Length: 145
Image 1 (cartoon, helix red, strand yellow):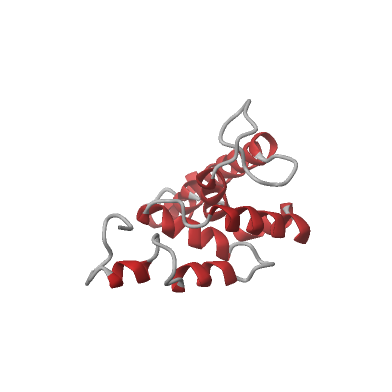
Image 2 (tube, helix red, strand yellow):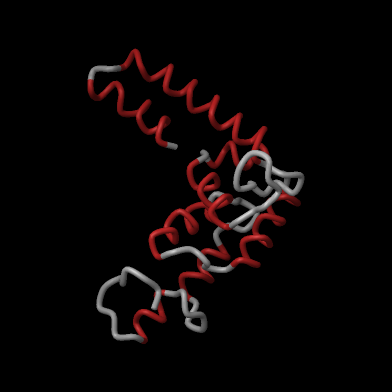
């Protein structure tokens, strides 16, 4: 994500020659992540040599990798498996992790952001913006409760 953004900015700061290299570097990193960190269920593992999967290990790649790459790699069945995995975890990230979580969900085309919308409008769980309002917040708090 970051290298692709830099590639887009390069011409603006008179570094157009760097754009192609930045795009190639981004593709190299994305391919390495897909080759080394995706398990057989198309869920990202935490690191090399482990089978453990955590919420953060999946939401950041889903957010940072371009939507076309996410969709190109995952069949509809595996996209649903990821949504099911993320649903099983719920909003277990911090307030600061919520943005990449939600944006990653919008990159999963088979769900069309439905689960993201459910998370944003949930008034039953504690890790929600609705719960912040129930606590009297007038702006987003630094922690869920």
